[in-house]
Amino acid sequence: MDQLELLWELQKHDEKLKKIKAKLEELAKKGHIENMTIKIQNLELQLERRKKSIDESDKKLNKNSEILRDLNFQLDEIEKELYSGTITDLKQLDYMDKESKNIRKDINDVEIEIISLMEEIENFKIDIGKIEVEYENIKEEFKRYAEEYKKVTDELRQNAKEEIDYIYEISSKLEKGIYEKYKNIKNNKEKVMAEIIGDECSGCHMILPTYLINKVKESHEIVQCENCGRILYFVDNSQKLPLQ
Image (cartoon, rainbow, N blue to C red; front, side, top):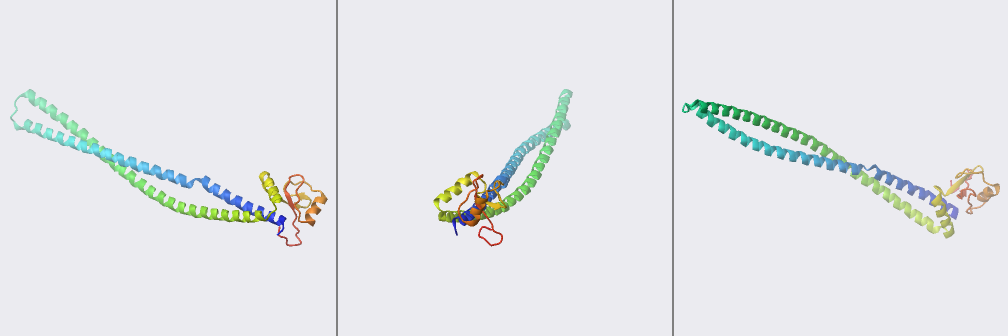
């Protein structure tokens, strides 16, 4: 394989490596794993907050239950006295009757708050159930995606390593001056090599001098386009050449 053919092979593997790197970058930019991780963390935070709210509501419920027991006890004691017939003082009876009504009102308020707290706790439990279902689903999806992501990226990295090995092997066979020329062009152009199509350079589409076209056709020398500097090659469609 002469130097021109080696350059062609080098460009081919450079382009493959570039595409592999682009795929890896595209996968990284999509950020599905990062987005799912954030979603999982948000769901965990929601679960933690709901459970904390249940604990707080439970404490309030227990406290109100104790208050309710005390109020019912007070009401029982007052009503025992009211209906025992031992108290004959009208003012005291009136006071105790008002006190009984106040306690009944307090009992009613506490019972309403207890019902509200029980409904609140039930709603939190329903929310927790829904969040837990979503949490398990996203975790399962994350696991599947992470496995697939690892499989794809591992395969791409292996392909990249193989292309790098090919590039190293080919570049080691190139003459130092020619390889330096290739690298210099590559730093400025997307493609180093350009096919002669008709009488044009396929890289910059400028008309090439006849002597330059003939030089490329008749030899395997490294010939550059006088306009864009790319290395020129010619594909003879009547023969099967390595550059086809």
